[in-house]
Image 1 (cartoon, rainbow, N blue to C red):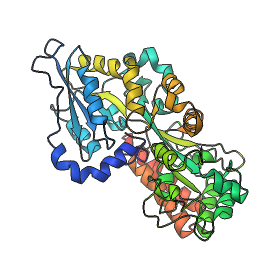
Image 2 (tube, rainbow, N blue to C red):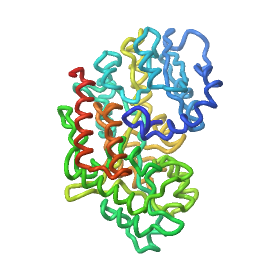
Image 3 (tube, helix red, strand yellow):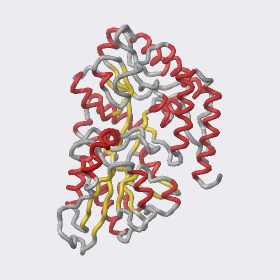
Image 4 (cartoon, rainbow, N blue to C red):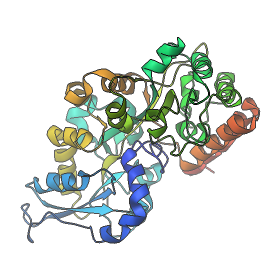
Length: 432
């Protein structure tokens, strides 16, 4: 559902979104007519109020039926669910500029432009009773000006998976630092197995999208006033280690499927792989308990482990004719109905509930690697800031690619990327 890829924030994180993208062309025709309803007749239970709710097209089976079921259970209004294939973020942005937009929609944000443009309603009061129960890392990007503009639905994250038996055979401990990761990857690389898979581009795309190695080096992406904060020697040193992985030839490259798919890991092509939480059930089915998960390891003297987290949010169209009714519905579904929230997170794919209390008690998340994933997402989770625009993301990914693949100077590349990011943030704020 999210953690995501495309649109900046957790764009690189959501498995549901990845699956949808893969099947989008094939499904486009039939789903074009999927703007669906609850099956009720006209004149809803809320005195005739009819709310239109948009979701992006999830790839996991059962998700569409589930959200229709949630909508049908609401008794204060009739809710029609529309399943939106294609470029959902662009569709939403365009619809919010018209009088025909949805009343309720999920947002890969909301974005700063949508908030500053008065396109989304303030949901501070709706989330108030449970605000402290939401994972603070994914709630933070939904806050602007001290107000909450979206309610997180569920969390996606990415992790470092490692094969216990291969590490034990090589006498390698699960790496707790980036230096240890480089050493372990080298030791685990053999004739038929590579030590580590970060994607077929060496990790530039997935790790660069949220700058997670920079965060693991103890840095922030942006300062509080919106300037790039990562052009630091510690960040350059971390990226130099990623270059070493490339030159050591301990990275798997040219895998049949990229980082988001665990095939290379379960087929034994690599001893360690960076991929999403969504891959955990498939890996467990193939390997049993012969695997563990780790955060991206700490880099340098002041580093700390880090994992990227992201969450789509439920938002209300500020121009909706039924804005107050829409806000009541969003509160009912994403604050009050914890049973539906847990079902949405764990019954269709594998995600972490956005509510801390639900994540703690969910049976599927209490033991083994799943419990570790929850612990990392809670204690080491970092979501991209609200101001982390697509342009900022691209600037950092370009720098990562030149450093890792081409051997460009890390300090010079980070300095250049920082200039681009600061300019991009100024543009987003309407200052440049």
